[in-house]
Amino acid sequence: MVAELIDRVFENPASSGGLMVVALTATAIVSNAMFLQNGHHPDPLFSTRPAAASRQVAKPLATLPPAPVLRPAAVAPQPLVMVPLPNPSPRRALPAPAQPPAPSAAEIATQITAAVQRELARLGLYSGAIDGTSGPRTFAAIVAYERAAGLPVTGKASQMLLDAMKQPLKPQAAIDTTTTTDSIAQAAALDQRERDRAASIAAQQQTQAETQMHQNYRIVQAALNRIGYGPLTVDGQPSGETADAIRRFELDNGLPIGGEATDDLIAHMIAIGAIKPT
Image 1 (tube, rainbow, N blue to C red):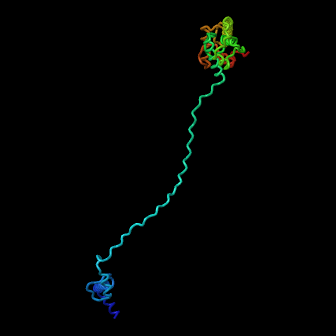
Image 2 (cartoon, rainbow, N blue to C red):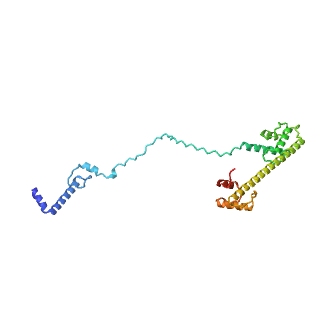
Image 3 (cartoon, helix red, strand yellow):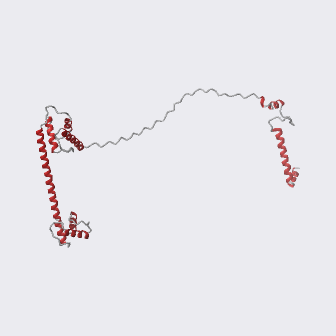
């Protein structure tokens, strides 16, 4: 019988497939109606559940008791928890403002001398420049004040002397104007001698410079005559002919053109053998 059924399926597959689909559909409908429904059918074909259970399930939703209202329970207060704060970062120290450089000992001495000169001028003992330089006039005025004030005679400006000069003189300490005048005259004489000595030194230096210049020109003139840049008169004078001959020599030897008998020119002539070293 099974073999005959299989033969018919192979003989007519379309009809056999349709019958199988119809059979499966009918089986699904019956199974759903009989076993897969939660509620009670109003007119069931077969009674599979007790009537009381069916009525209890079919009870309308309106008769159900209302759901209880849930109220939040009182929450007990929780203790405060102190959260430690992070340690603040240390502040950077601001750089100290730049301090002006401390004055040197020479600057302090100059300031004290200028202040002493100012006080001496106020007292009528000094009429020179208030420049902080201790010269003969400043020395003479300090000596006059020290003698009048009964101080040790030093003639030097100091902070101690400046402090004493800012105090009023004692009544018995009168300044001897005659001595002061003599001191000023002596200081003027010393200044004149110093100026004369400085002028004499300057004159000697000028004479030495001129002598050296004339000697350089004589050496250069003689050397130029020997190497064919003459004839020149060897008199040590910076004449026009000598300047022209020096410029020709400088041009031929690649030297800066100057036309003067300088020490550099003489050194170059010694290097090339035009002048014999002494």
